[in-house]
Picture 1: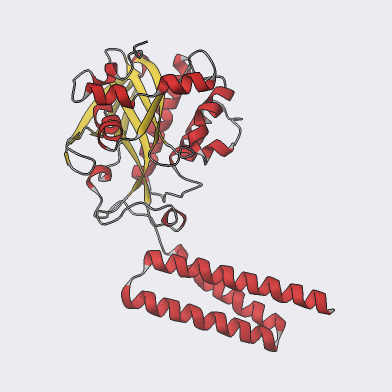
Picture 2 (picture 1 turned 30 degrees about the horizontal axis):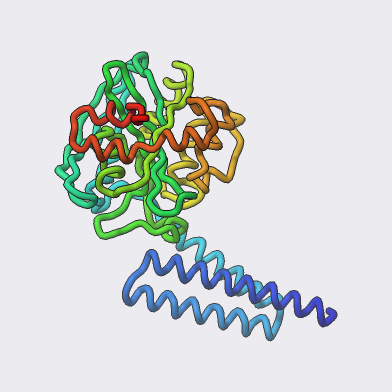
Length: 328
């Protein structure tokens, strides 16, 4: 083998060892603690050294060591399974459950908390029965807390009589956990579907977390509204039957909703907005279902509801208040 080829082969081997070691060390960090973590890191370092030594003695042997280590790591990682039986944070302690009887859908464990601040609430879980034939509106809400390119997505269904049910795909944190994006790549969090009242889940974000929340009416036919609602029902039933992990890229609030929206349009294109979720209005507009007039920029400005929500405070007509046109 020529010197340039030998150098390239060694470089590829080094990159694979370094990348594999870094990935495994991070996975161990999220799933082990104390002495088991120290022992895991020590074993990982030994394996990396053995692989490099084996490569120096016999190039093929180095790859054999790496392959065996990868198989062992994959075997350990496969034992990390999602669960619905942990000490959950109160706001994600219950995922919504759904039963369908004709046009009637009974949702249990609907969250209706009364928040005192961003971390403390008077807890209340309720049951709602809704009539699919009475869905009148569908609204997309985006909530930005830091980076305007990243937003949390909620979908609110409005029914005749003014009732609203909001669905939100979220991480299911344990009581002692806080969210971080890196952990979302390493099976640290489960996925949960929360159904809530707007007075809970929207007011929490606008009035207590002080997030920048926008509400966009979505222009769907009654049949499309019904099918989208039922796709959330199916997700609720699937998660009740078998929990699954949250993933920062592949199973987050927008990518899961993308999968649900494919019920409406199986050829719905993939787009960077599924990751850079702050651009969702442009993506929805490109599909021809973003209601309203004017440019997307105009509709984005008109969609801001945080000031309206804060002005409404604890008013009983919160849902109506956040939809009133802004004063000229």
